[in-house]
Picture (spheres, rainbow, N blue to C red):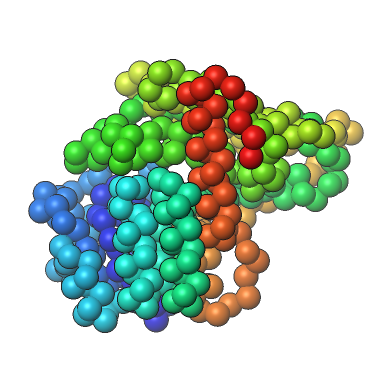
Length: 336
């Protein structure tokens, strides 16, 4: 039985709680949350831009801490889910690893490449597993699309475009999302989902060229690969109230077009040039959040699993997004 502590009980902490609670062989035994208000609201519904977070958490069944050091000293967890604001990721992850527990840390990994390096080094020194929660690498439709790209049945990728549109996140107690010093801004919090998928599906580009509004609440990036494909991703927090959260993509292969829109029916389609019917069976096991938690648990259990996300992968994605921010800020292409 994997004993799990959740550090941070906001919207994403509740998402991890839901995923761990539905997983055989694992049990949430403790939570760490410094805000009395968040703890007081644990029994009430929560909100975010994606459905699925736990509507109710019974704190009476858990050990509750306001100090992570005390939780770790109690010795009642084997792993942590760290779902705190981004600026706390590095220090909290290192603290957990040095205490001898495995860590699943939410994306983005950290605000700087130097902090990512500290996390990677701490995991290696402790001999513990560190996984960063890039859920899109596990999201069924994105997994299926990558399998089609890598499988080669429909030829090489020619072009791809990705969109991720949201209203400004307003569910954090102190609006930390809006503080770039704590969240890294929209590119590092929202846009990074598609940046990481581009990295995962197509590799690291040679250069990036980005445009953004002055506060980078909107950003559009062209990822340049000398031999193709042509790829662009755009995202924003500036959609008007009432706009349904959107994540979507169009991927053009030599012999097929792959389409996904989370609000469409059907959400996932593949159109082929030769009229053939590809296998559209999606990976099972729930959404990307559930599947990333399951993957982490299987690694801890010693099961043989194909690698999906390494700490260095996540570190390189941070480097990539920071290059995008620099490109938009300075109005020039930035090399990787």
